[in-house]
Image 1 (spheres, rainbow, N blue to C red):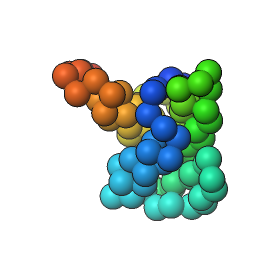
Image 2 (image 1 turned 90 degrees about the horizontal axis):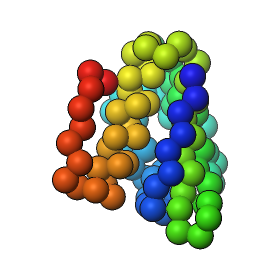
Image 3 (image 1 turned 45 degrees about the horizontal axis):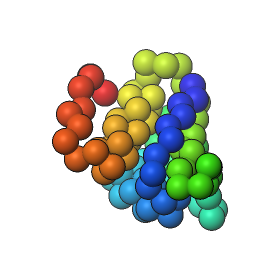
Image 4 (image 1 turned 90 degrees about the vertical axis):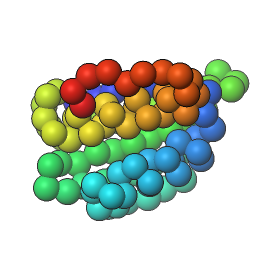
Length: 96
């Protein structure tokens, strides 16, 4: 599956948040200036960030499983965490 999110958070801040968030759940497999890979028993996540349209960052998450797998739930939850950094009053809903 592949998920996209546009945020006003800088690309480097998104990568730092990803290292904190995924670091406790998955093992870092690869790291680049704008890309991270994490893997574990539940699957693999590839994260890329790119500046887009001035003050925005395009976040792309790819997983190696189907849409309702455990690794997809972890990926979707990360996007909620990023969104909450911009909008602290956002209430995360959902079973992921």
